[in-house]
Image (cartoon, rainbow, N blue to C red; front, side, top):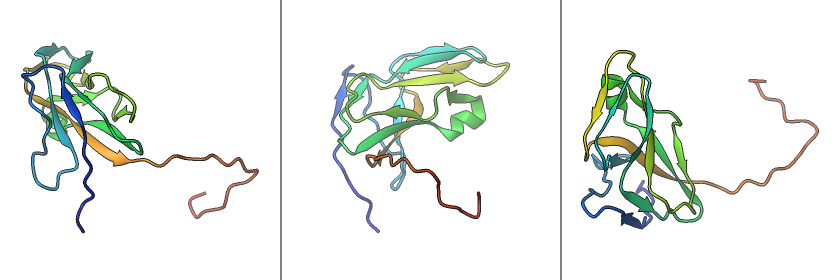
Length: 139
């Protein structure tokens, strides 16, 4: 099955930042890079800029997620994983990073891959209030 393709307008807020890219063919997430160098102390949270803004089409949303290698090796995660980017948001993409390592600082250099952006189709949901829900095996 061939994956659906969409166009995603992206604006560099800093002309020197690298555009997001897939590390491997077939990957779900586009790698996002830090546009600044930072040091995260143990358990410190911080917004890290990417220097990018995107125009996600209606009917889609962006989900910013941690990179598993950094999470395992250094304890770098996101305080709000996944971070939700709505279709009408046009501000800078920022990563709400947190250092979960209790002992070591995490050094992030400008240009380091720090998170992934996954674009997914999202339906509009019409709520229907009911008195009872259907019964399932799970309960």
